[in-house]
Length: 212
Image (cartoon, rainbow, N blue to C red; front, side):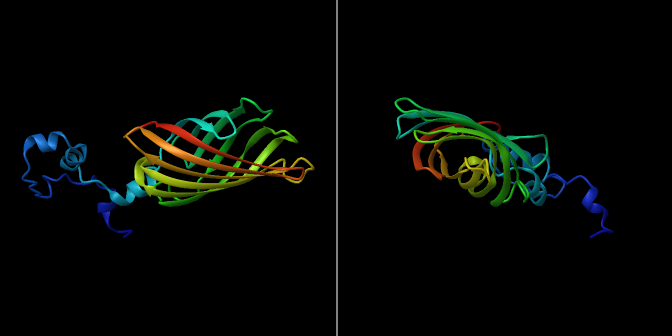
C-alpha cells in the first residue's frame, strides 16, 4: 500500500474507466449522483471518513409542560470533529427555564453510523424546587439510521455542576426523521435528576437541516 502511487493520484472519471451508462440525457440531468460519477468516480472510503453522516439543524419545538424550546445542533468547526450545540427552553405557566451551550468532539470519523462524543459546556437550569448552573460534563452516543440527516437517534448523559451540592443529572433521548429534504420531525425525552427533586419533559421538535 505504501508503495502504490495510485493512492495520491486523481481518481478517474466514468469515461476514463470506459463505463458506458447508456442512459437518456434527461435522466442524467436530473441526477446529481450520475453527473458526479461522470466527472469523477468518488472515493467512497474517503467520504465515509470525512463527510458527516449527520447535518447541522435549527430546532423549534413544543413540550408537554407548556413550553417552547429553540436551538441549533451540531455546528461544525472547520474540518475538525468538533461541533457546537446550543438551546433555550422556557415554560409558559411554570417557573421553568434552561439554556446552555455544549462543545462535542466525535471520537470516530464523522461519516460513521455509530459515534460517541465527550460533551463539555455550560448550562443554567431552573425548576420549581431547585436551580443550578455551571459546567455541563458528559457524553453523547449517536446512531445514524440514514445518512445525510434522514433518520438518527442520540442519547446524551451529562451532569451540571458535577461534584457540588447543586449537581443535576440530565438524560436526553432524541429521535429524528426527515419528512422532506430539509425538514425533520424530532421527539425529545429529557430526564432531570436533582437531589431535591426529579423532573421530566417530552417535546416534539421541527428541525431545519442546513447544508446539502
